[in-house]
Image (cartoon, rainbow, N blue to C red; front, side, top):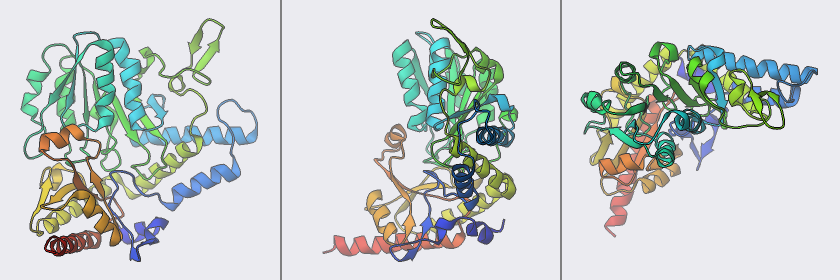
Length: 410
């Protein structure tokens, strides 16, 4: 991968922050956008801005064609039929859609939903709401001391009245890449469907939904070089056919009477109202970009960069790393703490050096409690990051230690 040329495609990387070149290491929260994505948004608004699906004039037909073309690109990207790709606002809404439209119909009092202790709030709170509404209970695959799932507990946890398994493909805190195929095989052996939260995994790993054989897959545009405000839900066609709509209104209907309606065909049955047309088209451009670079090459680059960053970070006295230490078992999100320094203070000092990281509980409060923490600092890398930026991170962290040492001795 020619990272030098890739970086030229991202205008924001030319920016300076506090007089220093921007080093953007907050990719697990949101990624930067290549010029091709920005251009796609500008082209929509300046060339063919119109509503989709119902218009018979040129602009509407062009907008519809590009919108549905983007759906096809995303379907190809995850190896799924086009009719099974549903557009939502984000991965969170995609999971809520499943919780509401599938869960309310199939989960009853006394049933169980199996999650993991490392789930983002987006793949926890919707199931808590379902449990409250239906009287079911939640169970959790434990997280081990090295940041992996205690997968040996799975057979026991699948006993009883488990109706669904929902887990993240990649932890946004620990970086752990979970053995989702193993989980899916074990659950399917008992007739239990599986939802995969792919918000962290899909942008960084080659993912094929049919090969994985998951029943649901949720992910977001903004973490994979696309615009904000767009998410994707994939589900097996037979499951989508028997699910009721999540939202009612225009475009998700085939026919309407005063007292009842007939739902539209897939995938439009789940897309009520005017969609986020421009940003869906922008996501299509992002997928084009990722495919041009190559997801296997992106994964190889991040694996090598993670290995390098972990080695350099371990050189800092008092720095504690979380998650697996083998880059093969993890993604490029690295959480850490430095003894005596609060993560928020670290984040502020790094910002003075032009380095953007994330500090906090990362929407994983139960996992933080499991680790005995209130927060961590997190540096997360992507295809446009370099070893030189990892070196700059290490220098800035060492400088932060010196600053706090001086302050604490005054």
